[in-house]
Figure (cartoon, rainbow, N blue to C red):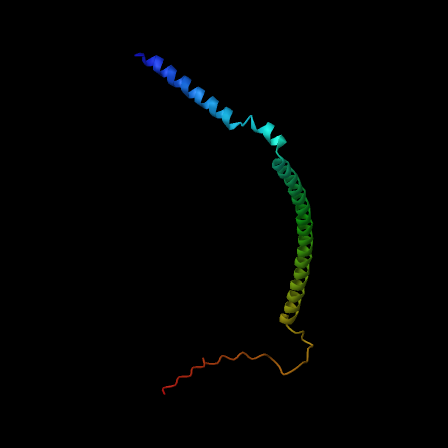
Length: 123
């Protein structure tokens, strides 16, 4: 075979035959007959069904718990917002200047700036 075209066709046919054989072997056409008779495979199928049912149950529990968590977290955030509003109102009421008719305590507030406290020991 001295023809380059003939060699190219032979290589192409060999590659196609290789991949067809590979796909046939990878499909395991013989395993479905044996798997139906094997009790181990039947036990695995039953176990898989039980595990899938358990997974659905667990998923329902998780969804219910997460919805409960979201509801409680929303209530917590609302209570925190109310508390922050009350604190802001109390701070604004405390910071408001006293009315002119106020006749309380000892007068105006004094602000004192003290020097920093520094202690040095040489011994």
